[in-house]
Length: 482
View 1 (spheres, one colour):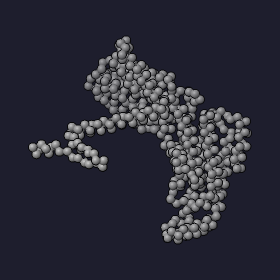
View 2: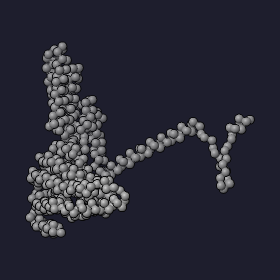
View 3: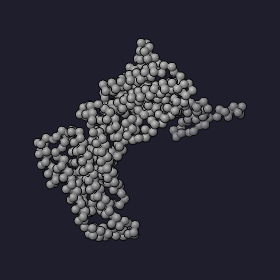
View 4: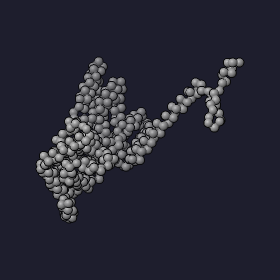
């Protein structure tokens, strides 16, 4: 009876209102397992929901990616008819699956990337197939004993040579995918030809199905909402210029204004970081753009390589802006009187540098030469010369003496020895660094101007009208006088 009573014991706790609550005994092992399963299911559902939410945001940010997925599905559905429909299947047989595999492998986001893979695949398949069939015929004439030796040596030599060609920069940039397909096709033809009797017919059917798959990919990617790699590169370059101008404006404004907003600065600082990280994207787009046919304002022989030079010039400016940004977060800062002394000069040089970048953006967007760029560059150079003259005429002795007195008074008031404070010379150096970076940025913007003018010459941009610069010049002079 005592054991039975103890198993039914219940704990009661008196609460302030006089009521009582019963504490239920803990659940058993089955309950714990059920609670654990519910927790795991909740975590899985939460992760799936986050993945779906991220996918939704990606689709809303760039609907072209959703359209690309639909295009891939459409191409696969059409090419699958060669396998589903009996008349087509009787003509191609199991080789129809090569058309499906071709669509999966070569269909890319941009038209240029799709052209690059399609052309490389067709040419590499044709060359490897023809070479494999030719070596197979030579091996057939050599007898059964020498046949496997000849085939094995040919596979070794051609596969090794094709693999080595992928290390050559010029081949890797334009024919890397074709070299890989050549190795694959030649190996398949050589190895399978040892057992297959009708090798020529097999090679012919595979080449036909691959040609069908690549042709279908080219038609779908060009006819339904095409995404041109050349246009993407064009937009990327002028967007990087705009981000660079915003970053320069944010850095200079924050350094010389005490009431600058750190939140706005951090938002602008993302610009130069995007420019620094865009090299791989620019090279990839330029490589794919060379394969694209004439479209819009871009001809087949458009100077896409010049865009890479412009991108390199922009990154040179971005490195200086990154250094300029480090001066803002430096622990050692110049005295306010020194910064006030250079504030107007630096802001003026920054303003004219930004005007030059914005004028270059207009030139690239409209693909029209600017007759006002020389005036803006001259204004930028003049502002930089004024900044350099101000740095040369800096009354160093006066500032150092004033700063030394202020630091000594402050140190005595705080009870801190002067050795713990940085010397006045160390406080002047950050400002000198900022001024030197402003001069270097203006110099590198001049390199961007030269690269854009070379692009305008090679791409034959339209000449600017004579009437517009005359209307804009008084405004620029007014800004310079101000």
